[in-house]
Image (cartoon, rainbow over all chains, first blue to last red; front, side):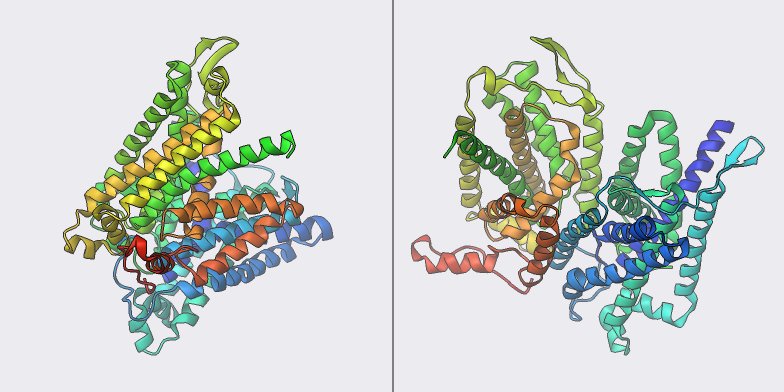
Length: 308
Length: 312
């Protein structure tokens, strides 16, 4: 019983990392209704820039953190200009309709963001060619004991940061006027445009915030391990995508539950079937959630717009 | 040409022909409006199935390839059933998840029998060694290249012929707008299932040819990068004709070869070029409009049946 509880707690703490990684992806999808495959590579290149400053120029931790977040935003802006700016829906097409099939622009956005993923990853590897690169480590040395259960305080901190960011962003989207504008621009582009909102600027703003969040996530997750590898881009994209999909793409609070669910399922799969089982469980969970007959009714809602 | 260079050219041409099969399979899915990131799974399943046929059951090459293709088509059809009603993005992610599940499951598969030097058969993540049908039957690499090209030509001929029939027009209509196609009396679901099975079979056929060419396969080969590249080839080459994916393969593998001068920067340049290129030509080099123009400029071939719509 203690083992089971310990596994669950470890899973919940891991889930915090997944949620923080998925948050930006979900926000991006919610506001543009396009999946950005370059999301993980953006975070990875930003992290590599931070690691480069750390290793070559012995920059202090705060400077690395600022660099990672700022460069993620700048790289994200480049991705948005290149892959998404030309592929948005025309005002003539209602954005409220759920996606039927893959329309041409969606396919193009997928393909070109994939090409940019390859480009950014290669740039990162050119910057620091080694497989393991040092990253500022903020890992705690000891565990907190709670009876027989052990909790790693640094992981707890990341999970709390994830929950804080998710709940804060959700509240901001729900309560503030600017949040209302973001949701309106995401829900129905032409209606928002007719109401006098600068739709393109709102969407770019949401995209930039999402990229900055990916930088925050990259710094938080990597400082737990104190190292970064070329696998990080793929990891960010996949874990973030599963967490966001489980919670419903475009839903901000959903990412938190999706991340936690993913963490718990993975932790138990690992303790039962080993590392391969953990990986399999991730994809099996994703697949079942996608094709589950009981979610057929909500699928239209699942793929539409930005929700708190 | 020296011997080494000739061997290299034969190898590269075989790789191109085999990748073309996978790219054609991604192209078929794109025709019916589906982005699939899971075609590499059928490539892998076909490779394993045909390898098992020729190694474990000592079947001749033709039978092994056919069995692999049939197995891939069956798996693809089974995957298409539950994912039939998913929207575009959800379908793409579901196929990605399936592809990874298949890859991990292949890593669990152990089934070996004693061979001449040690056990043979699938051995989990260590892979499946000694698929030696070509060596045992004295087929030279050049001979195998001829066989691969012959299969590819047959596939191309069938596909290009089918595109001029009602069947091909129906597939394209579904890709453009499935609601409208259904209103025109097209059996959307049945055709989508058919296209999925055909695409799975094609990918598996390519996988079988790959397994016999390299004699060694492992699950890690069939990772999502392979499938995503196949989609990229089809999109880059163009969705207007079955020759498009081939052009995409030649461009990428050719460039890969030409750009060994600047290692490390190939993807930086190529990735940026692809993204820029897709902005002004979203349906690839050989898109419907260009194919239509070529077809009408060549009167003996008559009208291309698909009326292009560049606005789409």
